[in-house]
Image (cartoon, helix red, strand yellow):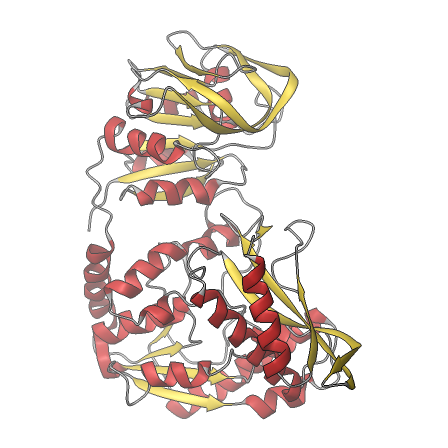
Amino acid sequence: MKRELVIVLDFGGQYNQLIARRVREANVYCEIYSYKTDFAKIKEKNPVGIILTGGPASCYEENAATYTKELFEMGIPVLGLCYGAQLMNHLLGGKVERAEQREYGKTLVRVDNSSLLFDGCSPESICWMSHFDYISKVAPGFTVTAVTDNCPCAACEDTSRNLYAIQFHPEVLHTQEGTMMLRNFVRKICKCSGDWVMSSFVQEQIRSIREKVGDGKVLCALSGGVDSSVAAVLLSKAIGNQLTCVFVDHGLLRKNEGDEVEAVFGPNGNYTLNFIRVNAQQRYYSRLAGVTEPEQKRKIIGEEFIRVFEEEAKKIGAVDFLVQGTIYPDVVESGLGGESAVIKSHHNVGGLPDHVDFKEIIEPLRDLFKDEVRKVGLELGIPEYLVYRQPFPGPGLGIRIIGEVTEEKVRIVQDADFIYREEIAKAGLDRSIGQYFAALTNMRSVGVMGDERTYDYAVALRAVNTIDFMTAESANIPYEVLQKVMSRIINEVRGVNRVFYDLTSKPPGTIEFE
């Protein structure tokens, strides 16, 4: 399927994925490339528009990230954001200088509504600024279209060349009308029709999978998480019984989760596939006995998954294809797209086994962001509770139990987490909080229950709001909801006598505990 393509050219800014997501929310397909990408490759992609991201440097420094001026002579619309706005003006004859005062945070911006970029926007609204430098003189042909009290050029444009520049960050939620500005760029300036919709994606993928697989055999590692579940259903719709899904229950899942996965994908479920559940709980508990160091726990859980998966794969014999639930952030963060540092290697399940005999990997979701994966899940008819399941780390509860993992501790955290999620849902907060879960601390303390002394564990509740999971703030949960959760956990979960609420943001903390 030929799609309209907008390219995000990444100069090292932290919001590259967020820009791409905002473009896709306007139903326009978008890909991220590093500023080091050869211009010939960019031209070959035949984009209908290009967006230049922010970046950490000053564009006038000797070794600053830059690009060829030919980019601005392609005749297609180009939008520079923050560093991208400064670089555009710098390369085209304007002047960028160090500002006397850094502008950071929520700022009132006044825009010129005659600009197509700000069509339909309020004359004044809040934007998110983050810059040391400023455009002190716009490039020849440009006119200023937005200002703030401290920034004489918050936006400028040269409509004759289809060039647009915004000093602030329209992609973040703090910019009140930023989504509209980006939509205006891709739909009104780039004139995109908006053909990127998940119903078309599903049909395209099913057709493509059938073509690729033919009469071959396919193996999928099914974790029960959103990505692997959606990938499995896509394959099932395409090739049915040619697909075998191996679900390894390592005993570190949330309460009832193993049975829920089997109910959906097993023999009594609605999907045509071969489902194998491996109950490896005791094997994992045995390997984790006495281990307290977080990284060691992660490695043991990851390695043991590979061993179990290999054993099951050998029973099946040679397969033609292996399915992975890789999604677009995995691709970008592995260094295959954008300018971000390599955050994780490209095997999204921690390095799938080399000893499994297969010819090729199928990654049906590798072009999608998480919110798009969920839309595909709903399009495929996967139950909502599974599609909107809370994010869950690969090592599972192993890293939500501080210190040694035991079967008893798993029971405690499963029960506490189940109560917490139930009460959050009852309060109608389950879709408005980015991520929330209960963890078991390694702290035990004295308490009094029923006039008797107790010496039990403390459970920590975590809830954060985040745009990109790179930074996060603790969620403001109503006190009465927290009180209800605390009361239920202490009364219903054996072995707990205290409940904490974790207020730590990221940074300095992480979202998970270990």
